[in-house]
Length: 274
Picture (spheres, rainbow, N blue to C red):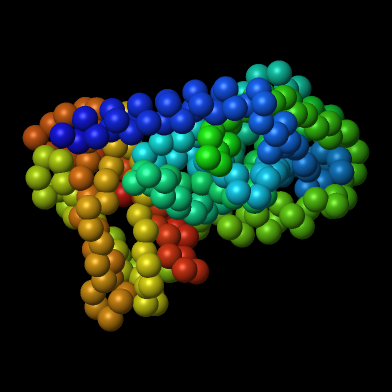
């Protein structure tokens, strides 16, 4: 039954998307724009340079997080045409949830800046970041957008750029690492059946409206069936169903990425199901 539900979700997403493609021809051409920005004016001798990807959205439009949920298009990044770049790590500010026709998705509205930690091939030399970006934006219809954006960082002594503060503020919205965060005291994830997980976490302060996002292998689907609070509101208990690609009699031993969200709380890290 779960598979059928997922297929309908995918079909709904496809229909919305194809409507959006039709609407994109006659629709507003400037519902979204993107640009690269740098926190410093030159490369200096840094072995890591902080950039940002700024996506602007018109009012009423949204774009998606790395794992959108029931439907949506996650951003895709192609850095292959860049110069003097070894690797780029994308940081993801905490998303917000959207409910459309019973489908829950995770993403952003307004402006969003994705911090980028860029490692050069040769330190001290100029760098050109050239990104082929593909992402989706949605209002009543969805439009797939493909853009190529670039920024050149010259060699030389670096100073802070005009965009450094904006990138720094965005980094403050990125969830803390579960290994070092003091906001969550204890976590347990227990396999209840071959497709169910009971996940419990204790926070250091009372929770108000806790959310959980689980990510597994490509093709894994998770649904939060229920959530309730215990221990004076400091303990959140989630009942989760998991439809995973690699079937087994139990989910014990599986490792998933978990993102915990609440007011004033954003923490993420790997968890192992017992």
